[in-house]
Length: 336
Image (cartoon, rainbow, N blue to C red; front, side, top):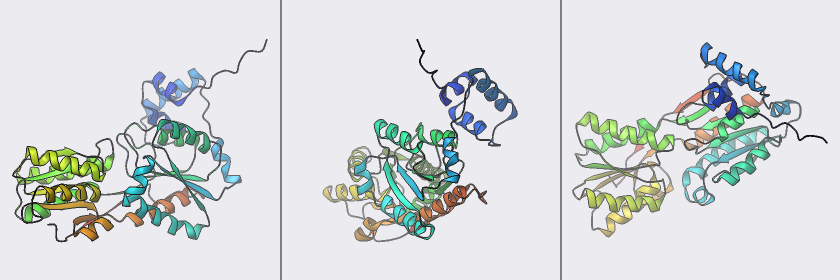
């Protein structure tokens, strides 16, 4: 009787055995220098004791290119088509890809089932590289891609260890700080925020920039947590009006949430900007159509830079820098 094949040891099992995080094991396996000698020794000993064999099959792609890359968005399909951020970054990605001759495969990973199917596909050597967008806390996909050796570039930082070294981001903290400073300069003193989701780095950093500006001004903060959608902006605006009836300004961490807030303010009879000044984030078409002041982030530039960095990795070049952070600026319109 032939016994079944021995179960393959996973990266998570090595991490647990060594008493470190999954990302640390990935960095050791892939030769990263960003690991202390003591930690490297622990991981290497765990690898030996468990007889762990890294899956480097994807690295053989160098000899058989597919001339396609995957853009993985860790969001439900509905958000992809409602949020102008994704349309902007896809325009930047496709414009840069045109010069490379590569095709773009758009994939979603908003549910565990979608992510499991995607992992099987990506590990099968069907793409030359991966662009990751909209990562949430504890998402295992970045570590998985590093483990199987697929060239990967992440849009935005990770919360916690940066498992994927190659990253392009916008300075969200600075953008939020500048937005609140603008409201302060307009004489506003009861400034609330509708934050993005705090399991995403953009949400955390925009909330941090808001808090820093108010702390430096010696003013109280008023926070309602949204999820970057118009519906959450409306819900949070109702909550804030109930909790802080004398608020005189809103910084919304996305234009869609600002649009929801504007609708509720109109329903409540609050004049914008006379009674309540409003600033959003993205400088999307929504901001332009509604006269919304908004933090402009160079979304298309972000997409182009991600493709350039990924192209270097696929070609086997050593990137001149692993991380690139772009600078936003405020566009002032009628709402503030």
